[in-house]
Amino acid sequence: MQPHNPIEHVVIIVKENHSFDNYFGSFPGVNGAKLPPAQDPPAGGDPPHDHVAWLQRATHAVKSQYSEKDIPAYFSFARQFTLCDNYFTEVASQSEPNHLMLIAADSPIIDNANKNRTYQPQEPFKIQTLPKALEKAKLTWATYGDLGFSYFEKIEELKGSPNILPWTRFDTDVAAGKLPNVSWMYAPGGPVELSEHPPYGRNAGQQTVKLGSQWTAKRVHKLGHSKLWGTSVIFITWDDWGGWYDHVDPPLKDKWTGGAPAKGPSYTNTQFSYGTRVGCLVISPYSKRGIAKAFHSHVSLVKFCEVTFGLTPLNARDQASDDMSDSFDFKQKPLAPPT
Image (cartoon, rainbow, N blue to C red):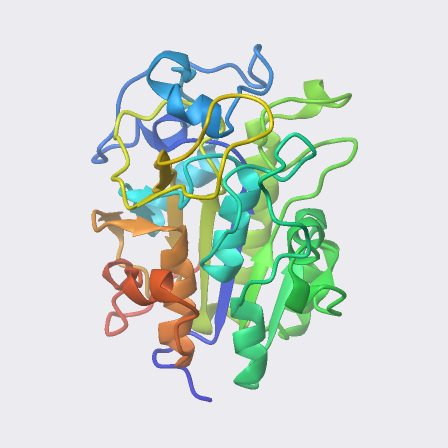
């Protein structure tokens, strides 16, 4: 199947836990709020960011902000390519439901599944996914990195797939010019956490946004300076808000009807979608340089893949979603690789 634009390779890099204002609120020309400087790593550890914390965000969200000196690569990419300042997480909560949305445009959960949330369906989740749709269309996909294993293995139709790969395989595949049509990319954990997740656990002192953004920049530069650049797009986004303040209140799309956790307040009829605004960088020879102002969400990335490769929508959510088209100009002179 021929793509509907010059893009043959879509790479979705998913980093962790930062709102738009926390990272990009000081970038020139965006709808941002100026906040006090953030420490790297943050002194307070990992802010609460589940659905209860999200409902209390007006008074409990951490109001601080990183600057260009902390994440210089991201500011550089924003100047060279496209930064979306009206891009929202899909679910008003934390990691797992938002990661599922980036894979399947769907989530049967509103918080990370655990023993205290008895309303959750049992894993593996029985949802339709973009990877399976790609396979049915004779197209290719892969997920690179430890977190990919965590989330893809929890979906019934993807469990045990040979396309769930270590992150180091990404560099090998780029060098060989053999990237699949769609890739999801996740930073490694271990002795030095590179996902940009705020500090938690025994390696808390080694979790910095500077190290995490440097890791991301290396992956971007490897692809940008390969023979795949001319037919590729890299989306960099953040899975959830991480407990950080953002001054733009997300619109209400859906309310949660799945029940309440075993402990804590009821979630019934509270906001399920959308969640807090996060950054999204669009890096491609066909990026429309500047600030993209149209409304986007995580499912917009799924929709972009569907439109690009001529796939049928998975469900009503992605069928109704924006497709990121305002971030591209496929008739322009292709942009140079990232510097």
